[in-house]
Image 1 (cartoon, protein in one colour):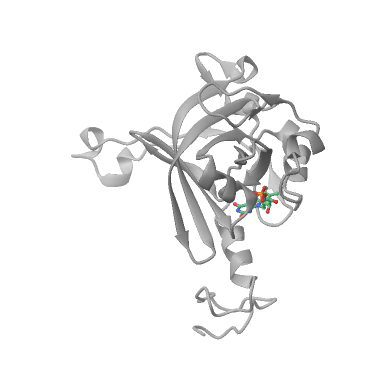
Image 2 (image 1 turned 120 degrees about the vertical axis):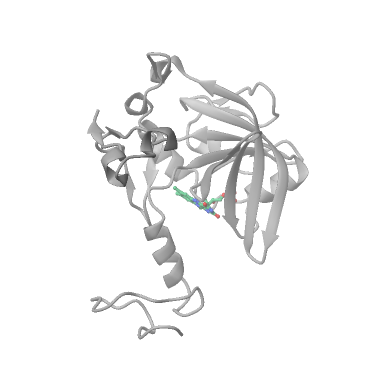
Length: 226
Ligand SMILES: Cc1cc2nc3c(=O)[nH]c(=O)nc-3n(C[C@H](O)[C@H](O)[C@H](O)COP(=O)(O)O)c2cc1C
C-alpha cells in the first residue's frame, strides 16, 4: 500500500495517498463517490428483449460530447439495464428532479429481472419520440439515446449513448431556456446523501482577446451572485 494508512483513518494527520487496491474492499469506492460530487443522475429506462420495462438510477452519469451529443453512464456489474441494452440498444436518460427523489431511489431496489419499476414506484410510462423504451411521464426532461458502444473492463461497464431527441416540460422553462431553479435537479452525494441546488452564481467565460496585455488576474472574471 502507498502512504501510511492501511484503511481510512478516523482522524487525518497528513494527506491521504492511496491507490484503488490499498484499502479493504469498498473503502476506495466510498472515497471516490465522496470526492466526485455532486453527481447528476441518469434515470435510465430500457426494454428487455421480451418487451419488459426497466428503470434504474445511475449517478456515474454525465454529458460526454456535443458533436455529436453523447451521454455516458457506468454500471458496477452486469445489471439489468446493461443486459437489456445489449439486446435493445436504446435508452432514455430521464432527468431526476427533487420532486421525484424518493421514487427514483425506490427504483434502485434490487427487483428481480422482469419486474416493472414504473409500476412499483407508481410512475407513468410515456411514449418516447425516437426510441422504444418509455420515458418517465412525471420527469421534467428526458434524453432519448441510441447505444453506440458498451465498454467492458472487468466489473465496470460503461455505456456510451448518442442523444437523438430531448423533451423539456414547459414548467422548467423561463426566458428562453431551462431555469435551473425551476428544474430543481437532484445532486447525488455519497451513500444516502443528496442535495438540491444551493446558491447560484455567474462567472463570465474568459477569452484570450480580453486577457492578453493585462496583468493576468486583473482580467479574471469575478463570481457574481444571481
Ligand atoms: C441515486 C443512485 C445512483 C446509482 N448509481 C449507480 C451507478 O452509477 N452505477 C451502478 O451500477 N449502480 C448505481 N446505483 C444502483 C442501481 O440503481 C441499482 O443497482 C439498480 O437495482 C440497478 O437496476 P437494474 O439491474 O435494473 O439496472 C445507483 C442507485 C441510486 C439510488
